[in-house]
Length: 273
Image (cartoon, rainbow, N blue to C red; front, side, top):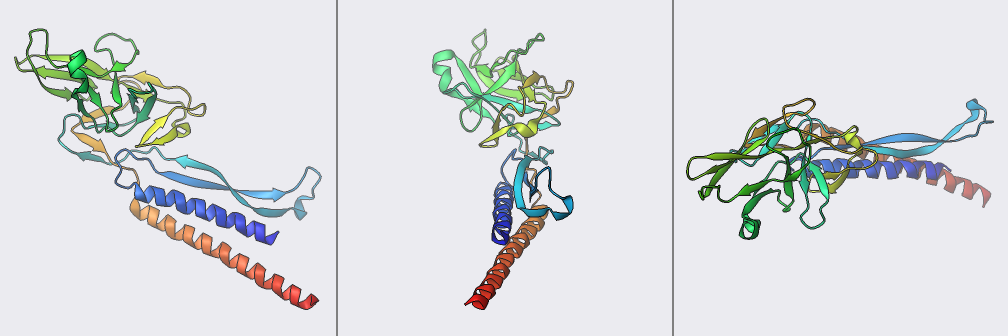
């Protein structure tokens, strides 16, 4: 049994190294949130066991927690780079599957591919998913694609877009007028740690996270928006390097325990031969 006990330690150490390695590799990924591996001990016992005779049988990974603490805000100067200062996730929707995803990566741009058929440009992420907005007026929480008309009612051409700290998306036109086309929708969850990662710093809701509730930035529980800025990864490289050393020592100690068990077993075999 001593082998299996140490093997659980090796497996856990490998998982810990994988989690830390993933954190380090995403230290420069916009909107990335680090994870931490948590472990629990295993015992072989029943309701009738003498508590003074219970022997541990190793450990296991109990969960891998995501840390949604605020990352540093970095200025970029681009009007469609948006950072959330506080709580909330941007909502984006796939044009292929219609699936909604949630992210802290506010690196958006205008996609003109729809302008030839709909007369609108859409605010999209790097994967072409469309940013979701609330109506410009009223209290409705119905979401829609962030569509920017390429011309206004007077026929003036689009000249630029801005996003206020309250999430108002305003399109400016060549005749000097501007129109609010919507309010950036922020999503909140009862348990954001239950969100499932799907890559590109995007998440989808699960039964553990609960369903999303939507609101406008700078209201209630939702944070402010900072235009011309992005939220950096919340990975602290110094902290991760310390954790990496600890995990390596954990792995080495379990490997040495297996070596010791092998040596003892070999000695016993020699005594019987």
